Length: 611
Image 1 (tube, helix red, strand yellow):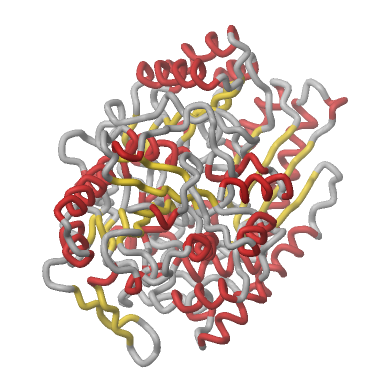
Image 2 (cartoon, rainbow, N blue to C red):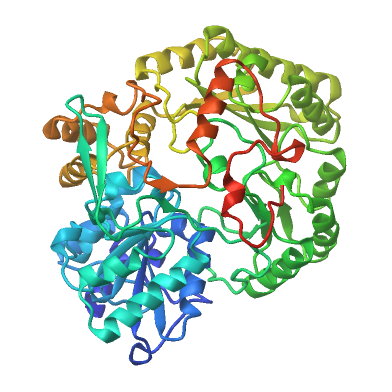
């Protein structure tokens, strides 16, 4: 097999994606381990190697004495073609062994449009797609990640899901598997025992029943399985595992830099944001721990850029103390420091000037809506004056590039709200004219609009998605009102966002659609080069399932939802209250102005919310 790979690799793009051997990769003796885990990222090497969560869990599992975790990525089209032509199964990078040789096959899923890649990777591995067709303990398939908060579309294919943050639960799962393997358990016995671990969802233990109109009527739960599965969290991030000796990629990756996670959760409560609710409560690392980890990462990896990451980095209380330590270190070592996820209402001139000493890049803000009324509907807690004053300060400090992100199709949106985006952009251009210190360079304003996708576990989880035709009409309306040459405007794909909505709010019946689309050639759907909506459309028609049932129909407030079996800590009562407030154009202050009673604090046993 090695000779065959050697002959194939020179014929494909970026062969470094497939060879492994990177600095920092973990190599173990197969005879010394009891459990081998193929850790699969359902996208290409350059996407997967940019994922911090995958790096963390790779390290967590390889810290276990008798466990060897290896990485597997989806091949690009040219490599897949060669693999199928030469009957070459998908392999793991560290050992170059076939995925089918592994005990456990784990997927981390962060994007709905990677579902086709999961099935395609199993097929390339020679592993049966359906859980019911895999017998015994070998090739036990489990999955986690953000998309696991609604696991139902993948229920036919995944043996069990790990819900929530994975550092602790992964150790429990793999340890139980090791015990089961050594004791000679069967698959059913293992699944019953693993379902008793808090945060584990075994789809085969839950049977959905449907009403004549297609809505969910009930879910029958097998005796011994939990009626509701509550997500897992890490309470103390300072003591949690974090890999400072990371793998140094052998090929250029999308985010080719060191990533330092400063806190988890979000204080804001934007009503459209799944991560903002499903990742609660807020827990942070101390500046001292972060500085130590940053230095260790940079010295080990040799990177020349480090990013402070979170859902809203400028909300981190220790940001000043951390940057006071990091900036001199970065300047001395010629390291670029970036702080994304900044908010226009707390982007300080002091922070801007500090960052300017090590890096000056474009500013990126996400007002999400063009009018104050609609920003109040979505609970953005951001005023126009704050946006304009922040931009003015930045222009006065030498910035000339601004990226602005908005959504179209938000609940209650009107044409006036759409045109409000254009008005806000022109006010920002005017602010540049009045405050810029270097007008010779000119101004570049990049505006992007996303097609609103209702997501589970948010106050907008019941909403209708506007039709594709209406979304495009609003895009054209906005585009017609962009007259300045300084503006670049992009809008998200209609078809991609429609499918994202289908699978975000989908139920178990969608498994047949995913399988049919893969048979028709769907794969790498997150890439323009490969996404073909017609394959998905034909799959829905062949399975007799209308996409509109999950998108433009909307969901009733009393309706049983496919993801109701998953508890992220935020109560449905709170989400309904927030939805009501949205239609009243009322805002809920962020967590630092008083607890709104979402329920997520109930997940904390030893520490309190760090909001």
